[in-house]
Amino acid sequence: MGRKSVSRKRKAITRRTNKWLGELLLAIQQEDLETLTIDDIARLAGKSKSTIYEYFESKEDILLAACKTRTDQLFASIVEVSQRGLSPLELYPQLIEILAQGTVDITISFLQGIKSHYPQVWAVIDDFTDQFVALLKHHYESGIAEGLYNPVSVELLGHIDKLFIIQVVTNPAIFSDEKYALSSLVKDYLNLRLMGLLKREGEAGLRTQD
Image 1 (cartoon, rainbow, N blue to C red):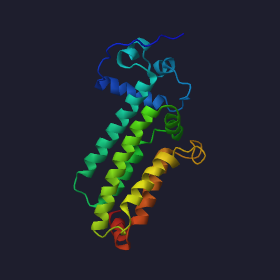
Image 2 (image 1 turned 135 degrees about the horizontal axis):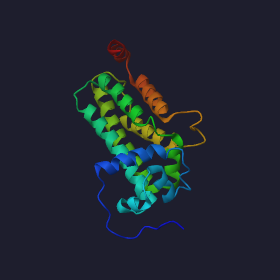
Image 3 (image 1 turned 180 degrees about the horizontal axis):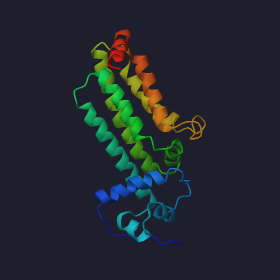
């Protein structure tokens, strides 16, 4: 049997810890999350189990920290660009690009596995989705107020956006790694959303920027 965690005070996560958590997140993408063990994580991270247990109590804790590190970094980038005072037509393409780049190395099967087997970790992704959708709703409201977007229900758009990420992308009967890349799905969906929102004058403005 493998070495078990003991109840003790853990070390604080440092910048160096976050670095190998980020590397672990990439290495773990093709693993079967249902059968994943601490031994697997130690092997993929290139760390001893004793080192891992200095910071984490369980594999759930490790996955949670790895996912939270990524979502925090991604949302910080989204907030930063949102605070530049850009017009809706300048901001939206940048939001699309940031989210697409932030998910380029994440697989659909990884999200599906997290949702199925690690509810506490999935809650981190769910919280990130809520934050991003709230930001999108504010963006939609701004675009409508400026006459760039068609006047539609922002609440409805927000619910559809969340359902796409939480229910549609993570449904293995609809999407799989063999046919789709997560970053491409995100980019295509948000581009379709933009095309549906834009008034004809807005489309002309978007083409002018291109």
